[in-house]
Amino acid sequence: MDARAVPTWLHAQIEYLRNNAPLPLKVENLRAGTRGGHVMDRFTVLIPCCLSNVKWEVVFNGLDAKVAPDIIFGVDDESFQPLANSSEFSPGSFLRDWTVTEPNSLLKLILVTRGSYLDYQRHRVEAVNDPRVKFEINTMSGLQGLEMCITTTSDRSEEVNFAVPLVLEVEAPHLPGSHLPSSTLWNDISLQVKFPLQRGQTSAGPPQLKLVAPPAMREVFDVDDVRLPVWPGNITYHISRDSVPLDDHRSGCRCLVEYIPSLQQTLQQQVREARASIALRRSFMEALFPFFGRPLEADATYCRRISLLASSGAFTFLVHLALPIQFPKVQPTLTFQSSQHFDTRGRPLVSRTYMDYPWSPRWDAPQMAQRIMDFVADECIAFKKQCNDLLHHQR
Image (cartoon, rainbow, N blue to C red; front, top):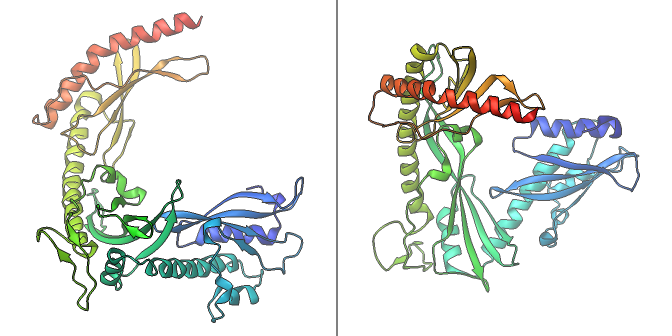
């Protein structure tokens, strides 16, 4: 962001929002209100909602700091009227008491408006005349952090979305000399559940399920590789006083409330396996040291990457290893990088990615390291020739 084109008071509001928001709010498309204008006073804010983002346009008067901003919502939210709420903590109250001298004013306005928007979306979902949706709402009503909304797809059909928060105890990777706790609770992992609507009714098939995890967890295991428990079919939903659905084949879970514990158990097992894989990767990386010496770079936390220096006669090169989460079942990938050959842009020449070398997950770590060393010693000759040939063609 070019702060010189933004009023100082507005720059302070935006920076406070970026640095202090408790949610991953994102400001983009900062621009002037008129073509060729020099005062940048409007922008787009991406608001998290049900594990997706909605876009709101925030419009300030860059020439008058005392004027509260306008917020323009999406075309699918024309019925969202937050100013109709006159309570003390409504968006309208924040706009009436707007003061630009407090740098957190914009963040407060966005957060309170988002709260009103989530309430609005919940009322929309509750208004869906479908027993399946009503049953899920009734059984999950007390779940803390639950979000729900109705979204419009690209073909203009609608679907009911639930963002179900999961709480999972994740073992922290062991770090030598670390005094950090051995485990931590992850409470920002969620299950996204989508029920497509056809003429206001859900279909008889299973909902669309997607696991969403924070980026840090992807270093432990890839959520895309998690095999979600099967959602059983043949369920007849009937809302009654005890909120119990009728199940035509009495096996398996029958709703989200019963599905979630099974999912959490599956995830916990995945985390245990990931924990064991970290220890195996660390042992393998240490087994490389007697053959290659100390690494130039290494991922000491999750042991996913390591770079080593190797040589063959006068030819010196780097060996980059990427260790998959499924190690040792899936072997590492190797890439060579010359320290003596460069392309016309000054970039070092690199090899293809190697996975065609001898490997068995049943070998111990020293044998794995020995086989990789043997492969590197043989393959580096061909890599050196490849580098020399490329340089010859560049001349």
